[in-house]
Image 1 (cartoon, rainbow, N blue to C red):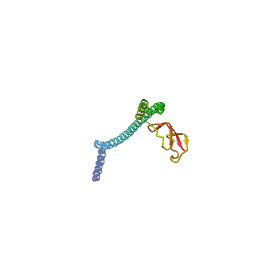
Image 2 (spheres, rainbow, N blue to C red; image 1 turned 120 degrees about the horizontal axis):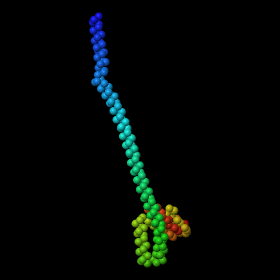
Image 3 (cartoon, rainbow, N blue to C red; image 1 turned 90 degrees about the vertical axis):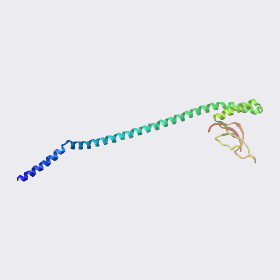
Image 4 (cartoon, one colour; image 1 turned 135 degrees about the horizontal axis):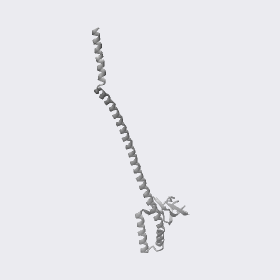
Length: 183
């Protein structure tokens, strides 16, 4: 029986020893390290999510700023273009008066010089005459005010005479040409 007690005592020592080992600082550190590592991983994941979210917000803000800049530039260009067209329309009657003067006195050097100067200024700011005579009628650029019968040498819907010159500002018609068309 004494042998049995020794075995029991050994077993108790082993059990006590195992329990004692679980309560040692090394065992607590191992368990704490695992818990701390898990906590760190969770915190790192949270921080990475926040960084991703902030990066997304930053990229959206940058894109919105760029869109605002483009819109602003487009609006400023449109306003400048509108102002230019408004001013150009005010000068069209002056050009019409010069054209009429040239028809009355085609050899007058002063009128020719003034007309060329205004045409040059118009060209520099993008105002050009719409070509009409001999061209087919295009309702975008021409306004037919009269028709004349076509003969064998002229085709139908061809412009034979320009009554008032039309002008374009870039790709926009300032004023369509008033024309007479063969029918």
